[in-house]
Amino acid sequence: MTAILPGTAPASAPARHAPVSKRKRWRYLPQYLAIAPFFLLFAVFGLYPVLYSLYLALQRWDGVGPMKFVGLENFRFLLSDATFWESIGNTLVIWVMSTVPMTVLALLIALGLNSSVRFKGVLRVAYFLPNVTSIVAMSLVFGSIFSHDFGILNWVLGLVGIDHVQWLNDPWAIRGAISIMIIWRWTGYNAIIFLAGLQALPTDVFEAARIDGAGPVQTFFRITLPLLRPVLLFSVVMSAISGMQIFTESQVLLGNRGGPDGAGMTMVLYFYNTAFADNDFGYGAAIAWGIFVVVVLFSILNWRLVQRPSRGQVSQVKEAVR
Amino acid sequence: MTTTRGRVVTYVALIVGALLTLFPYYWLAVMASNTTADIYATPPRLTFGGHLFANIGQVFAKIDFFGSLLNTLIVAVATTLLVLFFDSLAAFTFAKYDFPGSSVLFGVLLATFVVPTQLAAIPQFDLMAHFGWVGDLKALIIPAAANAFGIFWMRQYARGAIPDELLEAARMDGAGFFRTYLSVGLPVLRPALAFLGIFTFVNAWNDYLWPLVVLIDSDHVTLQVALSQLNGLYVKDYSVVMAGTLVAIVPLVIVFLFGARHFIRNIAAGALKG
Image (cartoon, rainbow over the protein chains, first blue to last red):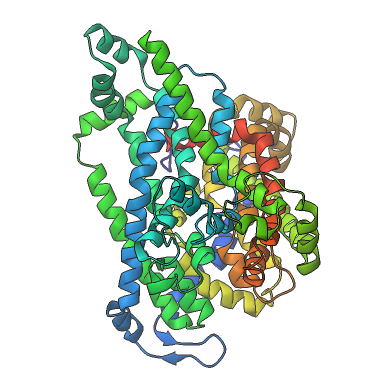
């Protein structure tokens, strides 16, 4: 593994021994020019907008007329805004409903692919395909699959004697439907990550366990799972980051208001709806900052949970995964 | 005996899982090739029908499909080429050259990872309005022309892949910085460029939120925005919507299948390193 810390760049500059002169400062011009595009683009389209959004959050503005300074009014309203709190709740609920089954399924698939089966390459591509297919397109397909009266899913459920589920009307069914789409999209991706983790594990540990008479179940829970921990945590952290951004599934499936009772109203959908559907840019900026705070808090919480085991154990496992 | 049975169970489970994963694609093709009445029948038609081309014809008649396909292609290709050039140039520089402030600047680059996209969205839209880029494809291409992820990822690759001796040799031959990048850096970075290229292309092709915001109500929508509009127009006529959806995902699926092995390997390797 290569160190990623700044300041460790190799001192291999070919131009190093050039004579010190007045033109010295121009010596590094090509290097500065080479990295300039990213920093220029970031300054214009990243840094400036973020700073400006802080200013916007203190205004009332419809995007066309004059801005009106309202101080912390937007943030005060945000704290008492039931819809915002519900959108946080919906986002977290959907994240849990999707991440737990997704992780279990992905682990099972990874274990299966890691055993000696044929057509591994084809299976891997099949499982990975959803991850690169347009969410808009597949949300439309799932919208039809979930349709109440004519959907294939309810028809299949009917065959085994289960009553029609109001997938796009009932609050919990809506969250379930969105979760199913997320599970479909990310299970294969995570299975591939887990598979890579499994293949990087040292074989001698398993050999030793086998000699000591450990069964497959025991080996899995006592050895495979603990050794796989860093990869599992990577997957959970990644799913937490993308889970906080859920937007397209809800918007395409249910519209800008998140469906009946707003059960599919996620944080980013609420932001989009306020800023770009209702043209309430000042409050939209405040919501964006609210989302930012939630994501930061959620990330800290995640890290706390990640940091639980002793340092020695983590580095030992990391060593193994290398 | 038990291991054989275990293997069979594993195999069957994996295939069933893969079929379930692929089912939405099959169902998409079934819906796109039947009439809406067939789909809504009880029991529904589960096999391909003969209306695919009629449905696709309706899509072409109702929305400017080729226009939005062309827009999407322009955005995806332009973004990919710009990202590959700017990211590889910056990554090559950060990986192999030591210049005043290089480590600080790389630290700044890493720090930009934490800037959330929603925070920038409203002012970015305002900025685009000032530039006169609302409804213009430039609004999608220019802000995405270089990114921290690509530079970081490619620098990791470049550090290990480009030997210092090669750079030294290029210098002895009198090559300047840019010449060295072209003749030494780029050829060595080719596998990394392939991955970053597919990755960027797929993301640009599938992007939805920002195009929806900045292209809405304009003549220049991308496929994803056109699809959601098609759905709004023809919510009752699923077959037509599905025909549009099918045609919209086919080019990307082909691009992906061509580079799938390479792509998947790099995704997995990236996760292990991170």
